[in-house]
Length: 96
Image (cartoon, rainbow, N blue to C red; front, side, top):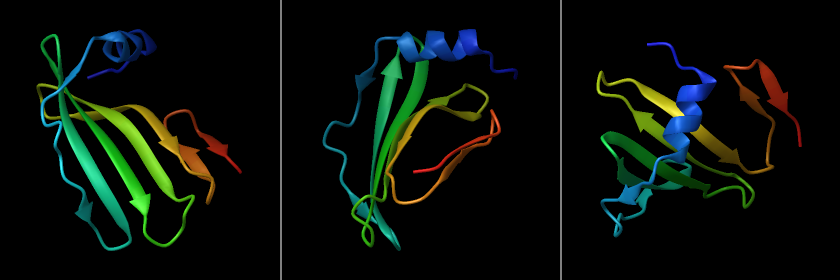
């Protein structure tokens, strides 16, 4: 499936509703994570929040589109300033 900027903009603009508002935080090896199941006009999404247990500025949060064929596509991602992050699709790097 080809993902265009137009499709990403349409998916991001869809009204969405969180299905599991009381999602619990789970402890992973080096971070805590909370995942929300989200629905929006015939589409499924996931919103995630991760917080490092080692570095105060180490976090990420974002939204994923869960396509009907099982493909997961990141629609938005926001990172802390603890280390550089790459955008693999556009081939760029954000240094802090």
